[in-house]
Image (cartoon, rainbow, N blue to C red; front, side):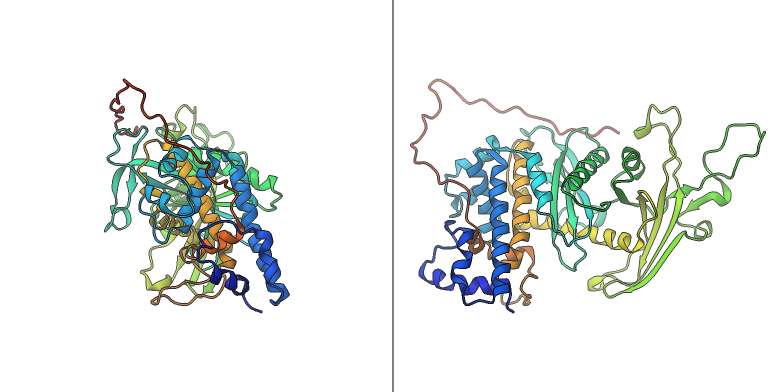
Length: 501
């Protein structure tokens, strides 16, 4: 049985030969998919119809979430997907055939457009990949605006500059946006973004991550998704504060956060001797002290897993439960009469090799909070695949031009971020249908196994099949222009906000 892309190629071959503008004009409806497929295998025909109908229904539902300037916003998203190369400038998107309006409408749509964010979040959860694990990554990325003195709310954020490695990146003025994306355990770069929020001036990224987790888990339950989702975060988040914010919901969610390899945690103290004077101890000492760098303090693990993996070689996972850090009544816990005791499972992961021959780093130490004993096989795979969200950020920035637009207001960037997330979702839905338009130096890929960038090369044809819900622009004449006697004034300047210690 041939692939879905081959079925669509047989169906659309004659039409494409007679009309060279088919990939450019969105006028073909998804209902016409089955009309020219009589001679194609029935299972392949049904798979193609289902895939095209799924893409068309998402595009229609997405347009319903755009309630002000909906047609311009929708066509701006299509222009991002059908541009012939990487998007380098926002005004040049108005030259794409998918955007049937003037260049001024590009900025007007982002400035005045309205998006029902709650409805869009529900839609992204509804089209989630059902065969992927319930594992989600949360991470923030910087939208740099270093020279935009008229942009409010800019803060100093870490930004990896060209040529920098690891933690050597510089700080840049801009805005930070925190994405939540579902992860796949396949050996590819695909993720499914479900949510984004701006980490605004003075906001705590850990608090916002906790709010994102609770809201997203609620949407999963409302959608009828069984199981307890696992949320994976990097070391930039405060694991103790995150667990404290989720303390009443750890039977519904579980979190996994990387910690430093020099952390010191404590076991519970031994039972108090009756009649002994003094305040009861909170932390153990001596043999009850757990130092990540000192194996002599570890003791026997509560759980242990050892297996052989094709990509990572020998994998060893160990878990110790009932550990807690020493906290103080300052910072996140300022105002407490006494610091809380926040327990976790501390997990150590080691591998013998990395893909592509990269150097093997030291052991990973992970903080896991949730009800019951951790699933060690899920834990180590979940955290190693957390880095897939970095590929999604690279696609958004380098290919779709997420951070290439010179926008003044952070609300404009937020609307553009939603369009980018919807574009990535459409690429994922179109993956089974896409043909491989590879360059001569690129390897061949099996049908349905294309990367997001290679699916995008064929999206113009697939968008023509799915159709567009956007209405064509109405004929109009030039506006009256600036009223007589009014002069322009310089925009207000805003200094970069420095985060409090």
